[in-house]
Length: 438
Ligand code: 5AD
Image (cartoon, rainbow, N blue to C red; front, side, top):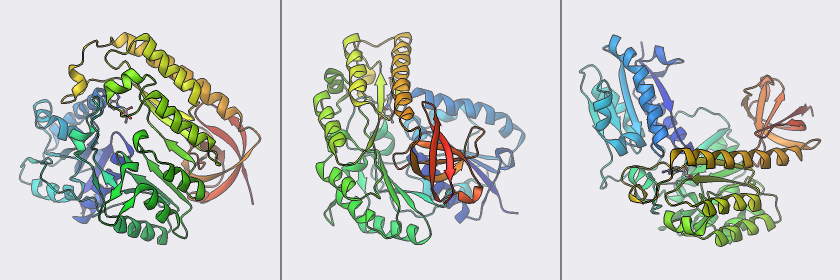
């Protein structure tokens, strides 16, 4: 009988796509997916290390897996992705039963590593060395969703934001060949996919230097593929935001009317300490351009509170920026000091309690903004791509082009289809409504 694997994913959308590549690599060596963890012969934790909390979650999970590992000699446990790349073999001190450690660029070889480790109890460690060329091509993949597909266009980051581990875990920015990206997208559309999500750590910094294609041009080429209904991208960096990109978004309705533009802080002084490369004023100028575009584009963001030295006045700058922008959604975090980053040595640490207070205020403010925004949808008809089962009692969930979630009753046959929904209710996080039969 074929061996079975179970993958648990922590962290960002790129990790979700990496897990699909890991699954592909495991299937390539003849394994099958286990429906539940306890049926698996191989358990892979695909990890995140962007904040300390993400790392603690993985250790907590490993604590639970320890009991499983104790009773079963044949069980293989792999910790892969950003956490082993950052923490290295120190993971083995806390979790000696782990068999495989591999970095975030090793998705395509996980199948080989499992085979090499299998049966002989050998521990395998495969972390990125800087000289390693890393393939961005989709070597193997087992996609979870038959209508929406992630496509890597670049990986790593050349920026050096003082709080961020990404350059350490994922390395410097590498761009994938644009012809290969277009080829993969065309192939996906031919196979029935309707939505493509372009992924890169700073996705809009993309440039194919050989073929002279920048991000806006790549997006233009992809949006023109017949049969493609939606295309999204995460995450752009404000400093590389171009008028050309906005022009493409306006010209092509296939490009979803949503931009995730992480601001991190509303204070120019803190932005400089973070080395973000823009001021509050420059960021707001970009926001104005987006809002003035002849298309209603939803804007979302990431916010960090309690960065070292963040004064009350700096924090107020973040709050007033939120008032001014009126984000459609926002992820907000307490600053988390990370190993090997510059900010870990910065003075004037903010206490956990104060960080917590500031985070609560940001989240409460955002909730009110979203609540009012969502209320304005009542009575409107919207188009959604039906995505899957809703968490609540209504049965289906879909996404609007601006990424808002809409819950409604309907048959499962609608999965992967575009339908119209009349909005009848809302919360701060989602809308609900009635499916309009056509
Ligand atoms: N502490 C808190 N939040 C962080 N992020 C990145 N690094 C840190 C850190 N050290 C947040 C940023 C980023 C998002 C993916 O995670 O807001 O945009």
